[in-house]
Image (cartoon, rainbow, N blue to C red; front, side):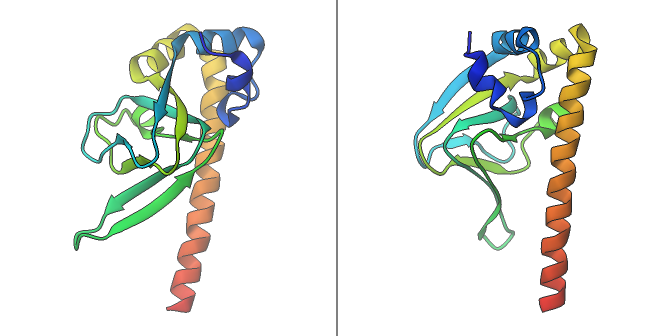
Length: 152
């Protein structure tokens, strides 16, 4: 079982009770990645939702002409791979690479779905938090796009 205090630090779980954190802790897998190692690659089957305990993760994609484009850098207490549980994506649409030694919590897709069925109120709060995070990301990307368009 994972430490509930570590899970409570995660933005996604910050509003959960100790009982709810205990339920999550039973489903979470702890994984370590060395600097430069692949967490997943574009086109690979999805394995679930990832939460960064420590370290940094680069989310990137290769352009058609072979250049790596960084889409995001995910730091401590933030998540990635959420489309696998939100949209039920079967394969990853980008690469995730540890930028430094990185520890993550992973919730398998099937465990996430089990929690959705067993505690709908808790999962509603988690999904609402996820939607808020996604909304902030969209607003940030819109601002960057506008700056690029204006400077063009």
